[in-house]
Length: 270
Image 1: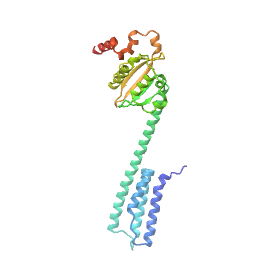
Image 2: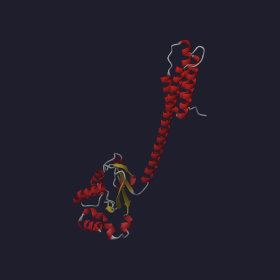
Image 3: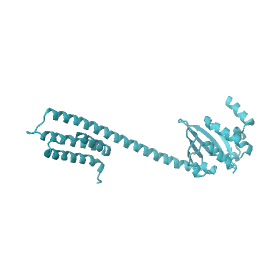
Image 4: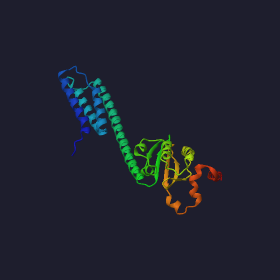
C-alpha cells in the first residue's frame, strides 16, 4: 500500500501543533492560543490532500482545542469566553476545510479534463497526419494553427515554417515562390489575392487547383464558429484524368476571371 503523504501531512501537522500548544500552555500560562495557525494548517491540508484531509485536520484541531480550553482552568471546565472562542474556531475551520477541499477537487477535475482534451487533440492530430487530404486550420487572424503532413508534402513546406504558425498569405507566397501552381507568372499575384479574399470571406465554393507537378487538388474553405477557417486540399488527379466533366475541371479557373468568373457569378445569382 502506497503512503499518501499529501493526505497525511495536514492531520499530522495539526496534531503536532495542537499537542505542542497544550504542552507550552502547561509551562507558560500566558501563551496565546494559535487559532490563526490552526486555520492555516487546515487550509494547507485541504490544498494538499483534499476535503477528507482538511476535515480530519479540522476535527483534530477542534478536539484538541476543546481539551485545551477545558484543562487551562482550575478546577477544569469551560467559561463563556472559551465556548465562544471554540464555536468561532469550529466555524472558521469548517468553512476553510470546505472551501479549500472543494477548490482542490475542482482543480483536479479541470486538470483531468484538460489532460483528456490534450490526449484527444493528439490522437486527432496523428490521424490527420496520416490522411492524404491536406488540412490547414487557421485562427480568426488567418494564422495557421495546424498544418498536416499531406499539405506540407504537396507544397514542399518545411517543418520549421509550418510549425511557426505562419499566416495564410505566407503559405500562398511560399507556393508562388516554389512555383507550385500551374499558372503563368503574370497571373500569380492576382490568383493569390483572390484566394486570400476567398478565405477571408469564408467562401465555401470548392475549386480545383492544378499543381506544377501534375497533381490536382480540390480546395474547400469551411468557416468555423470561432472565426477560424478549415482548409482542405483533396487529391482529385485521377478523377480529372479519367474524364471528369470539363465544367468540373475548370473550377480551377474561377479565381482567374474571364468567362469562368462570369459563369460562376451567374450561377451564384441564380
